[in-house]
Length: 117
Figure: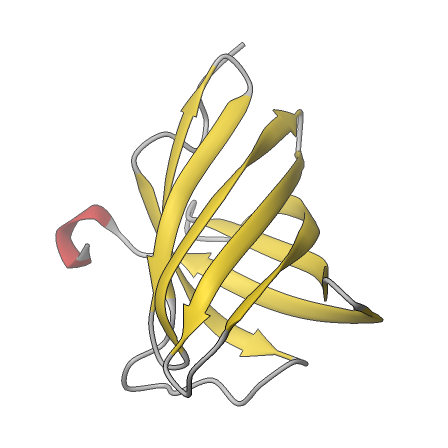
């Protein structure tokens, strides 16, 4: 199995859960080995976040937890579909929910080219 997501960075471009700060969007660093994925994220509403999960083909399933800039913490689960942009960058279309709230949200994250990361 290839380690497709290993060493890639993504930035959030849209979310139904919150307004995305286009100047300082949440960024996600992904690592992968043998279908296990993990990483970290930080950005407009999050001071520190971590995730861990698995990838099977173009599907990624993770559990996540993060500290909020406004105070408090949040966690939950998500399922992402990996897509390829016309320019070859990857895009993640994620459906997620927070623990204690079954509302399904959708976010889109686009890969940051290596020279911008």
